[in-house]
Image 1 (tube, rainbow, N blue to C red):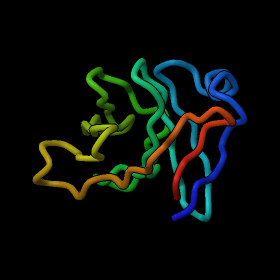
Image 2 (tube, one colour; image 1 turned 180 degrees about the horizontal axis):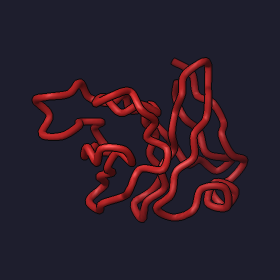
Image 3 (cartoon, one colour; image 1 turned 135 degrees about the vertical axis):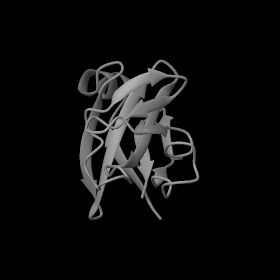
Image 4 (tube, rainbow, N blue to C red; image 1 turned 45 degrees about the horizontal axis):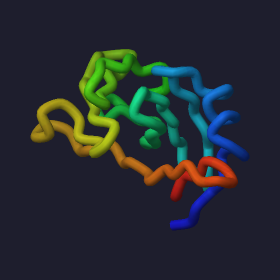
Length: 107
């Protein structure tokens, strides 16, 4: 895996991804969605494990959890665990870092 620079600064990242919003990117052929919450930025594969539909536009429900915009399946932003964790394969999560010279995601 390799670190990829998404934004030149945290301010630029915040301008591009509104609070409690998301934005999809393709990095190294991987479809990734970046979420911004009060606790920071999160990166997940842009695929709900229920029916492979995109997670971009998911609803933030608090406690670092989102709901699929199509079927409301709950997904933890920290772990990628979907639902209760025993029905669906977890969504792949990617490390994301805010550094002095930008915002990076490891893919």
